[in-house]
Length: 146
Length: 332
Image (cartoon, rainbow over all chains, first blue to last red):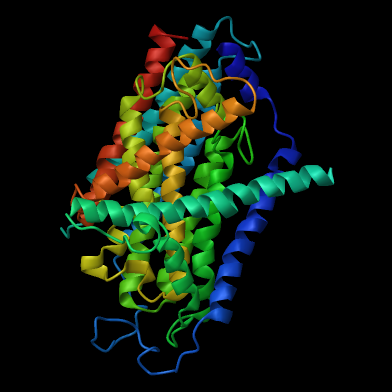
């Protein structure tokens, strides 16, 4: 079990292995565009009317522009997401290294590596958790108006 | 070389150009039929046997409908937005091993690519909502983006215990680990729950479909969309459901393997593994429908609270526990 996991982690992908992704990207764009163009070409020719050119608001005529201001909470969530997501990215290499053991043989044994990695991550996690706690205490995530 | 590339292209086309859309069509049919049965109705049953051809008829209808681009929208963004949702939805499936040794792109960054690409879909939804220049669309798009990024945190944190145990981001080796040991569902049950709930939020399905809550926002970000452009949004949602079901199966339910079943070598084994995978995925697709008609929609603030104040700390605790157990009790 250990042999399989370790072998697959450290087997490097060559750039050629990413080729299918780009083929797929081209294919996906092509498929989507074909459908859009097909419906544009084959679709029924409609008669223009003012009703088609107005935003749908359940039958009531739209009075103001739709591009109005919306709650600042959304921006706050976006900024918090960026902060937390960048930290989450740091977990990935740590977790893979932790789980796959010590292929380079730096530590005396796997247990020593794991305990060291655990302690390191506790510090990082502690800071992350403090940040989260501060955000909650600041009521940054409360949606009902205070 | 050229045959190699052509082979890969054919593989990609068969999977995302043929099988995935076909599954999505089947899923649309299943959703309408299952919903109907759960409400004591019959659902579409006229086109083809048991109504199976209904999605085909729907697609034809969508294509031949008038391709309206309303005068009040931002034309370029309005047309591009469906594509920006559709393309990532198709690409994400590339790393999923859907049968033994079969994946369009078996990469060792596996799940990292899933998160990187699937989150691009948020752009399409937000841009679509903004470009529609309609209040319902804008609110739907903004809500969707906030919801999806919030749950993405929980989603990506909930797979970290898997790496702590298996030591690989390659989905193929996650499956191999499970085949040799135990389905990750058992040791990592809380991670499975968090992943499942977050994937419902990521795909904008009930009980988290606030972005298109029809009782509040008409149809959310695709209110102003019609004909094939609407159909593409719709298809992308179903393909995302299939992909996330496939991911749940791969990460927690042993992928294409079954315990106590030695897959025979050769083609027959590969086909069998594909069937096993399809059966497991079907169950989770059914779960999407089952949940839809069981749970009421969350209110938006409850939804965000659940993501940030419950799931996120729960993930952190789970990571500490998993790492602690491995470091001090069971080094494996």
